[in-house]
Image 1 (cartoon, helix red, strand yellow):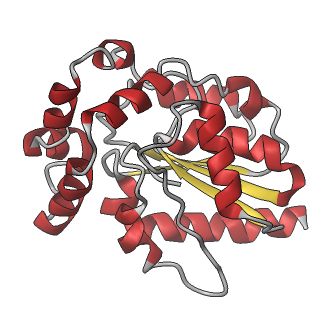
Image 2: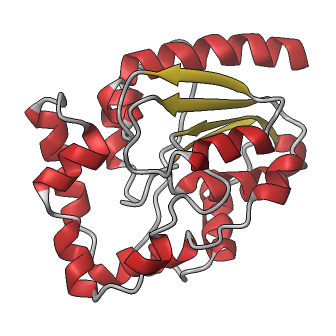
Length: 228
C-alpha cells in the first residue's frame, strides 16, 4: 500500500527482492478517489478482492488506511507491517501545509533538494532520486492537498489498539519527514508490535529494499508460524 504518491510504482525495487512462494498485489489510489479515510479503505478492500489470507504492508500515508482495513477484514488479515508510518497526525505542520495554494504544493513536490533532504536522503543514487521525483511530479496540487488534509487527524489509534494480529513496525533511523514523536506514538499504540529499526531515510522500501525484505520475511516466517 503506497505512500502519498498513491501509485505504488515506487515499490518496483522492493518487489524484485520478494522470494519464495509469497504472492503480492500492488495497491494504488486513483487521483479522483473521494478524499476520506472511508473511501480509501473501501477502495483498498475492493482491490484485495476475496483473498482470505492477507498480509498488509503499508508505507507512510497508507498506515492509517491499512489499520482501518485490517479491522474491517477481520481474521482474513494475518499480519500487518507498517513502514515509516503512523496512526495519528504525522507532523505538526500538516494542517498548515494543507492550506497552501495547490500550485505551491505541486511545485514543492518537484523540488529535488526537498526530495533528497526529506525523502530519500543525501546518499541515494541518482536512479532512486529520479524515480521518486518522477512519481511525485505526477501529483497535482489538488490531490496533494486532499491527502494532506486526510492526515490532519487520521484517527487510527483506537483501531490499532484493537487489532489482535502480529504487527511489525519498520522504523527508519534517518526519517526527516515525520515528526520524531509520530513513530514514538505509534510504538505506544502498538505495545505488542515487533520493532525493527533500519538505517535509512523515510523512503526506506525504496532505498533499502533488500534489508527491508530480509527483516519482513524473517519476521513473517516466525510470526505466522506462532499464530498457525
